Image (cartoon, rainbow, N blue to C red; front, top):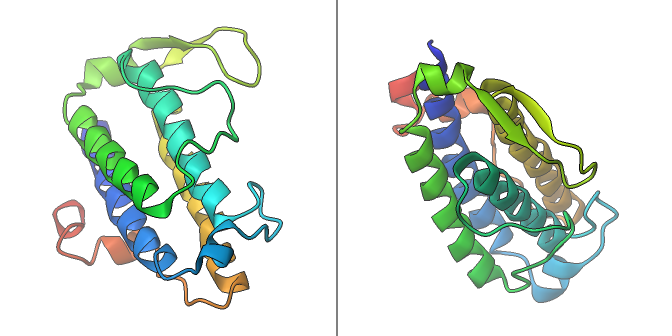
Length: 172
């Protein structure tokens, strides 16, 4: 699988996994939604907001446009319905942007300044893009655990499961 197809697969997988996770999180009560269960970002609310915040930061770095944040623990959307709407817009934006990439862009140099260590980093685009998708998967794992801790059945989010769905079959 070439790099472009690889990242297109991850963008489609990301959208699919987020939809499944949000379907499960929608069943949480208000108390469960904001309950601190001692996950890295505390609650489901904190965790799902963090994923969106980080995606905004990275997409602003990648494209030079869109919202960004200075604090990784921002909770710009405490309301679930509002957050879900913003998540959907972001997932569509990611898929659309990845479709514009070229092999030259993936190999080309990319510079950004981390939020946690404000010292400019320059490297080829492909490694930060891989981190971008890996970061989402990492924190969706936290959200998966939160559902379990709260007594809810978490959805399967495995990439191989995605590849067996209609959305994933083109990448299998």
